[in-house]
Length: 268
Image (cartoon, rainbow, N blue to C red):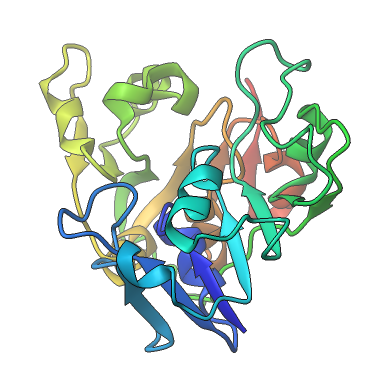
């Protein structure tokens, strides 16, 4: 198949493009949010092809994978075909609902021509999906191999934009753990944390590649997952697959994903 899909979430996309298909990734000159093209920090196969918006109108496409509400109109504009009507389409919802939970209505709730795919059963349960046909395809990762050594008595965490996302990702919880051991936070704009008062012993590291992140986590003593209200983080699954002991809040799908012998899952 020839699948059109925006590069929105690098970790999820890395797993998704391992299939036996051709993946058409919209690419703009400015490499902005709607045209990022191929990833720089992840390893993608040659079957992932960059394509400009101007080329999409004449492109052979078998399926459109939508991930953000505005992509529905954007796909129709660029493809000159209507997703769900002229062209098969699915909508992958990566996120937990926002707003008046559990009454938050999904943007696709009023449609029955586009299959709504959730990445966890928790998300499927908590969103108001309306009349949309839903399915759950749980997060998957490529196995990085059992590589844990834990030689450094430091805590590792992977959080993108912890300064901006705040309590949602548990940024406020980090100082509690940093009192126990040095805490290394990896992710987009993670280095901004060191500029904040109260974040002594917290060290931010930006823009590691996925292999570099795996190497860094494998030598940390434990992996911390302080997220309050997000979908199941792929970095959490990667850390567990590496064999790193997990310390996580008992939120959303974490209690299902992390077995008791893999670490500590608690709100205490």
